[in-house]
Structures are given as structure tokens and as C-alpha cells.
Image (tube, rainbow, N blue to C red; front, side, top):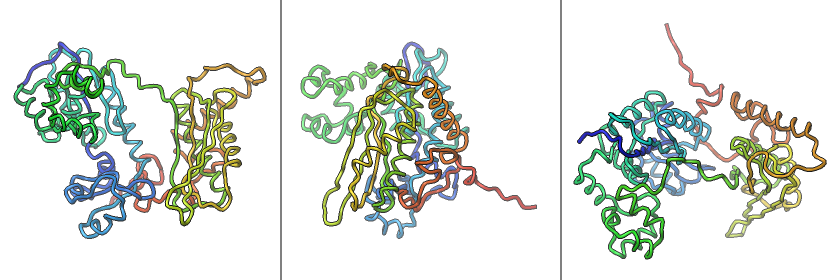
Length: 435
């Protein structure tokens, strides 16, 4: 069935297939058609799997040590998370996708919603989705699937089923009513956007087993029996937009966290200070990128001494006299908090920083004794370092307290990491030409 859809808004969800694995395969074609798993920080758990690895039974989120033997027996390729590569490829594909529609809403590192208000006359949803998919794959090399519908819930559902369609595009408005009903009947409620296992179990106790069952429910009764968001999902399954993306301004960020586990336990307070300075530099950079300043700063340390069955977590929070995004002042405050938090002799396994009570730049009252010239110099220095990181990578220019390279003594373990192909000059792929 093919028709134009110009009388109502249309929403598309773009989803990169097996994102981490696809990024790795893009620069290492030998991984194609091989089982591949990607591990989390410190190579602890499985966080991504190729279709071949899924078929072998590797579960999401499972501790890696329990599945190491199967990987050896099956010839599965094991990789550490390459966050530099994944983050850069995400920025590239999201920037390109934004040019295809009136509005873009980035949903996760590998998903974004596009919306048209209204959809252009004379175009088909499937044709538009196919053109977007072809352009994104041609320009980035990453395989994507696209679902298009009148609501975000149906677009999410259509994207899930798009992988079963030739061309990996599914346009919900261009399906027949029978085709739509079949997909709804074949979709368990647990697979719907925003419905977790517990909610699905409770729905099942009421005889609501699939999306078709839920779509037939009375929204008012669902709101009374469960809650209003689930009733809104019923409306969306029926084609009535509730979760609007017409003006998708993401909710203002309320806090920023930056932390990592150490590759090995740390007892040296100097190394703890180095880690906090690096994390605070990252957090402050993210803070400035959102045009915000922080009024609260915090740090935490985690330790698991021998003989304890649980992790010890220690926090320190401090309010700031005025909102700031200046890395130097934030680092200085973090180091002062560390001096009061650190307990000698404990083997620390993780550290982190927190920035909270975020306000837009320029908000809040100044101090009578503030020096405008000093504030201006701090702003210019921060912008210079941010620009250096964008152009030359995160280690070209930084603050002395955090060092210019990551000390191997506390870096998370990433024993199977691939090169940072797109963000480090030293990792650029080499091409050898022979006469």
C-alpha cells in the first residue's frame, strides 16, 4: 500500500543497528559476519553484541568472566568499549540526521526522533525513510533502521519491526489495517516503549498480553488501574499523539556526573587527586557545552576493603558562593573536598565528581568583590581549552593538576580496545600502496 501523508504530523525514529559493534566493523571489515561482543568499563560486563553473538546465547549485561570460555570455544571477537570512537560517530550521524526534518530530538547515543509538521505533500513515508537511510549509510557507513508513524510510540514499534523488512524501513501509515493489527498482536507488552518487566507482568495478570490487547483498553480505566503515562501509551497506540516532539527541548539538565572505576585499587592520594581533576575537567567541559553553570559541587570515593562483602561509598557536597563553569575553580574545590574525605590506607576502586543545581550562564547574583577582568580571563581560558579539545583531542592541552596524559596506574582496564580511528592522529588507519 502506498500513499502520501501530508494531512498530519509524521515522526520517524532512526536507530543504528548494534551501534557499538557497527562502529567497530566500520573500521575493521574483517569483523563482518563474525560474533562480536563489546565489554563495559574495566572489561566487566557485556554491553553490546552482534547478531551472531546473540545467536550464540551471549546475554546483555552478563559478567564477562562467566562467558569467557564460550567466547574462546566459538571464536567470538571480544572488544573493550571505545567511547571516543562511539561518541564521535554518534555526533556525526546525529548532525547529518538533523538536516532531514523540521525538528530533531536525540533520544540516546544511537537513536533520534525526526518530525515534520506537516509532512511534505506529494511524498510517501516509506520513500522518505528509504532515502534518509540510504544517505546516512552512504555518508557514515553505519547501518540504520527507520520506523515512521504518527506517534512516537508507534514510531518506536515500527523501528523494532523494520529490521524484518527489506530495506529496514517500516512506514506505519502505509500498512493496511490488517497488517497493523498483526504487528500489534505479535508485539508483547514488555516490548513496548516505557513498559518494563514488572509492569508487563501486572498487565498480564489482567489479560493484557500484547500491544493489540493494550490498544483496545479504555484509557480512563487504565489510568485508574495503573497510571496516566500508561493511559497515554494507549492513546499513542491508537494513533493519537500524546508524547509530543513538536518542540523537543530536552528537559534542562539538573546535574552532571563524571566517574570511572580504576583499573586496579588506588591508595595514593595523589593519584586520587589526578583522577578527580580529570573527571572534573570533563564535567566542566560538558557544563559549558550546555551553556550552564553549577551552584553545587560534590565528589565521591568507593572502596571495598578485604573482608567486606559490600562497597563503601563516601560523599562530600559543597555549595558554591556563585554559579560557575570555570574548570580551575571547580578543580580547586574538588581537591579541597578530597582532603577532608580521603581516609589513608583504604584501597579505592572508583572516584567521581558531581555538579548540581545547574542554572543558565549569567543567572544568579554576582559578588561585590568579584573582579570582572579575572572572570573574563577565566572564561577565555576555558573557551580556549574547549576549542583545543575539539580540534586536537582531549590530551593536547589541559590543567596541570590533571596531567596531560592518563596515568596507566588508575585508568580503567580496556585490554581489548580498538584504535580511536576518528579522534586521534596517531590512530588514523594506514593504507599501504605497492607499485
